[in-house]
Image 1: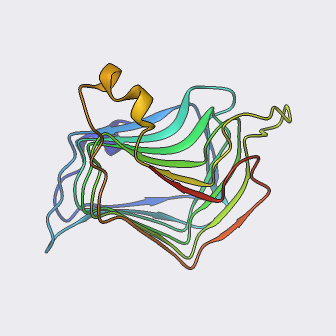
Image 2: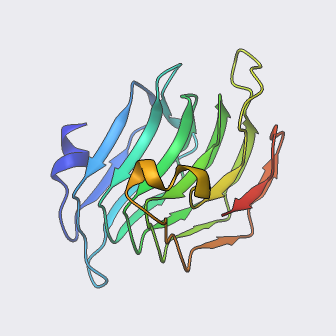
Image 3: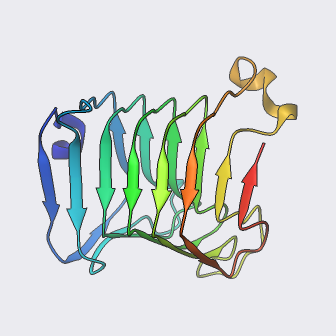
Length: 173
């Protein structure tokens, strides 16, 4: 957890195979276009959020690359809030109680690609909720509670395999 929050331009964090329990947050981590922060692992490196709020959250985070590992459980699997120019590649995100991946609060120029997203809105308890595979933006009814319009623009969802969602595979507001 500490390494995630202290990462800087050019840092490369390799997750060893195994299960990492809890909620993980990157806040204010800024790589650069030339020297992104890289977090990689095999699909056997699992961040397990259990029944927590969010398994992995990126807040005000820029130029971070996430690749190869698994994000399991949590109310939400992966959230980007106010985060730009991040790339998610070959991730597995599964068994969330609500949406699997959410770009919100004006998160822009992010890409999720070649990832496997499954069983959103179900979790281990098979609870049906807002189970989008990838959710971009915020419902306009909630804008007032978050300080105005959510301009999550120019995001890309490319070549992902999305299955078993209880709502839309991809929802763009």
